[in-house]
Image (cartoon, rainbow, N blue to C red; front, side):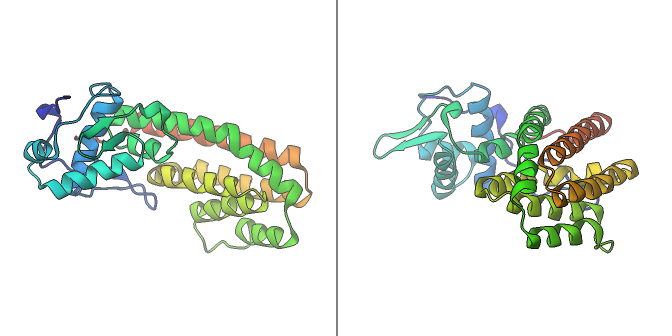
Length: 261
């Protein structure tokens, strides 16, 4: 039976400080009891300390280790089961599964909560995936957009100075995704937005980045209006590359606070 390292658990551990996507300042939230259990088990699974096939300690033992009741342990284990990270066998116990075989994208978001190093690794990987895929969303949108999509895009890109650049940017990406006519593109945009929420302020607090985004808004609107799919793809690829570089540089200058697990 796998052992849960006591040194990895802090009953008073708080959720890591995260950058608020509205103003770039940091805020913290103390995790609930089952979230602390999830974080420790995630750490051990992804670091290989709990190998695939390993049997977890009993609910009673986990409850003693984490100083919680068994209902809290079950809540944590159900969450991990839903991520395909744990298999619960009735009357036998819980076993670790190979996380590389999971089909849940939620794992990527959870990985970012483990520690600062893992956050940087996953963030970099997510931005690479975004850079390689979202330009195709713009390509499809330019070919398939309707007059209603174009009207919405014009409003967001050119007619709403009352909105922050970040809010306009968010709306533009959502309109483009819907205009693509592909529901999976819409869901992909939602996923990326959820993952990057904590870093929006870090990017948009810089004047040069806001100006770059405003230029992008005008250019992508013109390309989609003209149904120039190739140009729309190139414009999207260029701005995502710029944003990727800007965010990573900002993180190097001001890295997130160290995580506690």
